[in-house]
Length: 368
Image (tube, rainbow, N blue to C red):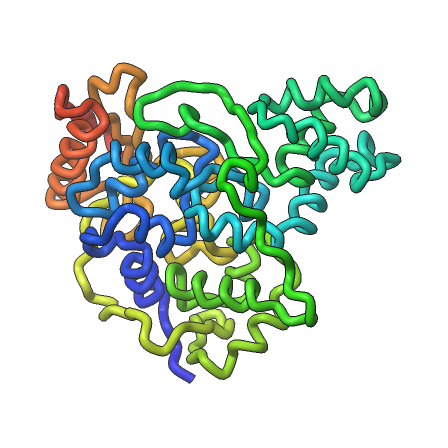
């Protein structure tokens, strides 16, 4: 069985994630290809798509949100994702159990005696009037009936798990600050969530396997689980295994992939790329060694924005509230050529974020 080293896996990841060459595909197609973008920080998907698409216009993404072609909702790993409306409706039912378990993992003591089906029915009844509500508003409405858990636990369970919700615009629009207002996903999109298959089959799980490999492969089953948070996918992997090709990584793990998916030469040059906070190019794996060193792994879950140099995390970056400059902090010593590439791409990012008002980049001293 062919062994793929970390550099080969890195280049495959960059290609699948549209980070090796910026793609010319439409924004909606890119969101679908990437299986959504993690979006609990509302402005981050704009940077994620700018780094991946040629001539990306952020107004297009805002328009897709307003027109309900894409939606912000709790999905993979119980995090807010920006996904296409079609994927939200197709995937949400498959995530129900996981979402409940993850909220209970945080609030098991508070919610231990609560009938969750009864709570869900009450939440849906409140939201049936079509009025968007914040999590706190919904929880306050039901707190008199369920006083013991506390409003935070009630709200988290209702909004993140029991009642599939869309976070409505203006939340998530370009250069816009707005609180979270929720409406049931089916009300916002005008269509009911797809029900589970009734014959014990798992077509949604099988589709998730294929879609994940298209955007993240080659990958191990543990990587798939780390991305979506779903525990019950071994049967789906087994069902599609005959369609897939297999490799090994340097640790001996089996990696699965779609046979025709791109696996570039490991020596393919990789351009500098600026990634947003919580980008799935890093978080979408259990073994993140293909793109980030173990010493820096904590950055990926701490909300740090990172810079890829030669395909790997080599710096962090920030932009001030007034976006007068992009500030880069190297994690290792950068060569002169690497530094020039970081500054050049940083200037383009500054122009994008400031809407061409500033191209300033500051690079902090490299560590010894």
